[in-house]
View 1: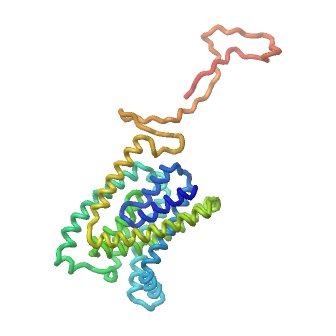
View 2: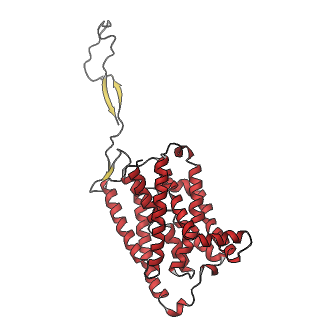
View 3: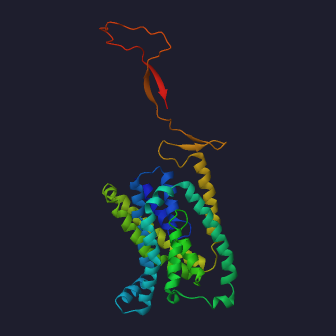
Length: 333
């Protein structure tokens, strides 16, 4: 991986990690577009998530400090927030361990990602309409709660919604922001809780994944890793500030339309064979049958050609050596 690829992946990770458009889906699509298919490239994508985590630590350092003091018994609200984040994290820990291999095998492909983008886009259009009707109502605004008023039941609900985002293309931030709004948080407060929940979720997932690919890390270029983390940190910091400001004045419809448009592009490119694995380009005919550019394996089998006249040499030749009756290759596919 060269520095240009490292910068591109860092930008994609940083921009999409906290926007409700799915960072995992974007990273997989961009990696395949650049021809990066092996697991070491997936390990690199996991490493640069650390830059996005550091962005939250920097921007919400006061909240993080409150939680740290709360764990030490010196800040009641900080302790409550830390407990709520832990409760919201639990479903992802359990289900993530149980279904990690299935997700890697079945869903880390362009077509399921495109379907998740479409479904998420439709959901966001509905949520945006509901948001306009609910959050612009002066009477309803009085009923909104802040992060400090979240209960453990609210947190558990948000945590289960976060698990839906295990399907690449869904977006962890989308599900947690929608979940936060559903329990009564304003959009910008729901986004803040989503960002804070990313600390244990992304941090834990990064450590878990890296432990399983330590051998790949040892072969990765250190310069590319550091560059990707720095770029992801800067891009994520900008994206977080922009999203909070945007959600304070606008709804989620923009992201819904973007997801649907991206899904259409992805499906069109997949149909044309742009997201192929190496040289095994799989495309589709107009009629719908699948075609592979890689020919089926061919082996040869000796047939003694009983239907054809055969000249049998009784004495071995000094030039050609002993021969059999007839050695006509038969193709077996």
